[in-house]
Image (cartoon, one colour):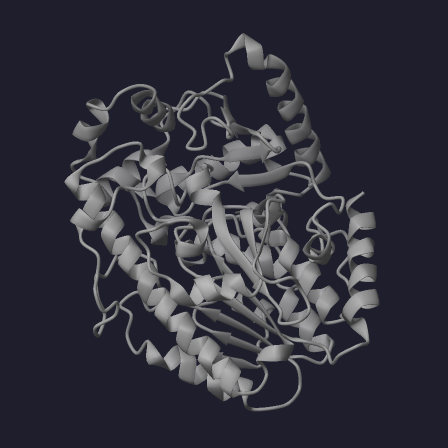
Length: 485
């Protein structure tokens, strides 16, 4: 069925755009560590006029997700079109995790073969970097200190104006990654304070600490918006705006408790905006279940490039034209670890309303919970202890999860009440468990084999010295044994 939808999407593109105009430029804008906390997504405290304007000229996806809420894992997924357990980048590149194979097909190689110039501004954060032979590279560091922010737009101008050949440019900004810097060289001009905001809704908590962190996170979003405004001005001045397919996304949710490094909505749900002047509808919203895995087949279709076979993602273009187009009914995400501090594998499926999280190490302490608390929220345990139900139980569940968590995202969008043990929801639980297991088999999930899970956990544990992992002690061989048979 997926292959049929991919071919249908390609046929739709070719019949509507393929030969009428030159092949489009593709501009992929990626921000760090932010969910859909934008003005155009209904967050009144955040001032994001440039992204709001981009959304008004294109399509905003209300239910867009990354396959895993981690930097390297998310980026490798949209560049290869594969889930982390399929491509191998299951943890951070800075902690030695990597693709299984340097030769894994990817977007950069495919577009170069199709005659595109390819550019990267900002970090790649995938091992090995040689898998992605960009023609142009600038600002390779993560730049979390936010130095020389004007260099992003000037580097983009250098690349965009260098040739009339069609281009693919991936530009990767440091905001809104921690540290949450209130202001950098006067941007934003009027930063928010704790008195101006409420904590993110998926906290279910309120404290002065949470309000201040939320305010500074929003300040990062405003600064990001300013940077994107400079970029779009460069594109417009180049004269290439009208034939450029623009995609903006966040690489995963905010670095908050119940956000980044989790399988909750706060971690995996992202903003996704697509604009292509005159080619797709403007000022439109779509509620389809969309994954960033869909970007690679979409870009290859737009570029009239050779398709990569057997990708799990779908070409998005049919739903851009017709919201009633046949589309997926279930969407899948996963988690392994970020660094060696927080190994806690999970597999997740959601349908239109319900979401199931399968914890592969049930009834054990999730190290990611304490990792985030200790690093960023020292006063939060007392706030959690004083919180009402069901919020207090939600945090206890996150700390030591059961095997299955089932949530009604219509009535409980922030996942506070686990329905897995409720008799009224047993059929839903059974159906989603069956769907999830079929997906794991179909995508050859290596953690279906208990020995793989055990061996990977042993390798992670072996890196710990005096209760903390040391990168020099981490020796990984999972690319060799995950698919040995």
